[in-house]
Length: 188
Image (cartoon, rainbow, N blue to C red; front, side):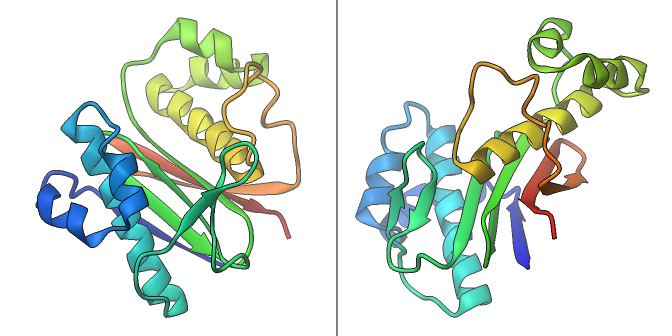
């Protein structure tokens, strides 16, 4: 079981006020972003996590995040609660649940044949090229791959063509006007 939270309200909150509502560690991380957009995405992702933890598990306050090997964040004080966050210019996504999860949200942008050849295997590439909407189909594959890598804790790697060669997971994908979000979870 999991719950997915999505927000497109990246520009509609007071960044200064929100920075005071989050943990010191998250504030420090947010302030490492060079541009305000990145800071906003980082802060909103944490605020969504706080909301998700409160609504799903009754946990209040600022959660402490630590990174596992490979960079996957976990809740220091709640090791049995799993979460993942992702953000892009159009949206922020947070997923919480009682088993490992990965999430990726990506803006639908112009299709790049060069990037597709670098990241997709032949079967995936054929599907993209035969699609009525290659850009959307490509982003769907991209979010599946990245959510799987976040699910496993591996992060982006050099060989993206073989990433989806697994039957152990399920992908739940939503398409919005400007972005696509995919959650990766264990197959039952």
